[in-house]
Each structure stands twice: as structure tokens, then as C-alpha cells.
Amino acid sequence: MYKQILVPVDGSETSLKALDSAISLAKESGGKIRVVHVLEQLAYLSFDPYGSYSADVLKAVQESGDKIVSDAVARVQSAGVAADSRVIDKFGALLADAVAEVANEWHADLIVLGTHGRRGMGRLLLGSGAEQVIRFAPVPVLVIRANAPP
Image (cartoon, rainbow, N blue to C red; front, top):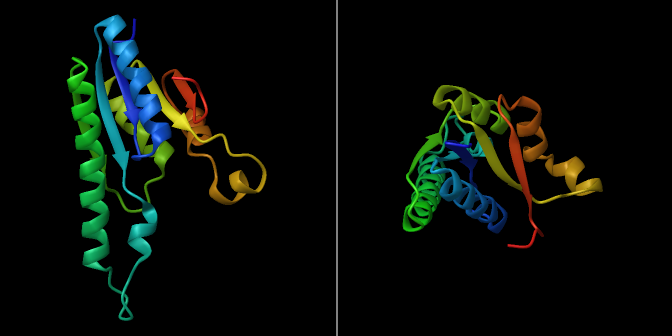
């Protein structure tokens, strides 16, 4: 059924719940998982007084992204499922656009992602990455809520 499952992760418990759901689906279908992490756009806004980007901040963000995906891939592989990863590092890339692009390039059958389920002001101020991914996704999306049972 789902042979190529794409899982955006950010290192949060919610994204790990989504990853665990994807692992279960991949086991049932004999599928594989691609873990993807999109580097925070805000990291590019950190600059010194002369207008150049802070190399230290960018390096820290990149190292954090690399660790997030390597930990996620290790989790998938320890469950006996094939996995690889991709870190998206494009200035100005929106989460939804980056995820849709990887889904198209990799020919994903399904995207599994977590949502914090924010409402009201929290959603207004922070936005909804899951909602954006759903709108732009070229394939079905399975959304796992933060408070969903395991």
C-alpha cells in the first residue's frame, strides 16, 4: 500500500509520535521511510551589525538539523525499517514547499507528520506547519496529534 513514506521531523515529541506511526505503516506494507528536516528560516535572520550572516548561528542550526535526522533514521532502522534522510537548507524555503518538493522528487506515497493542534492565538502567532503541508501536499497526508494515544 504505502511503500515510500515521507516524515518531516523537528525533534519534538509530536514529530516522534508521527515517526513511530510511519514505522508501523512501513512495517505493515514493507515500505521505507525518508526523514526530512527543514532548517529554520529564522536562523538566516541572525546577522552581525555589518549585515552578514552569523556563521556560528548557521552552523549550530545545521548541526542540530543533522542530529535530528540522524537520530530519527536510527530510530527507524532499529525498528527494522529501511530509511534515509534529507536536510533542506534553502534560504526562505517554507516547510510546506520543501516537503512537497521532496515528496514529488522521491515519489512518496504518503506524508506522515505531527501537529501540536494549536488553536486561537497560538495558531495565529505560530502558524500551522501541518496545515500548510496538507494544503500543498501532492500525496495523502496522515496527521498525528500531539495528544494522540501511542
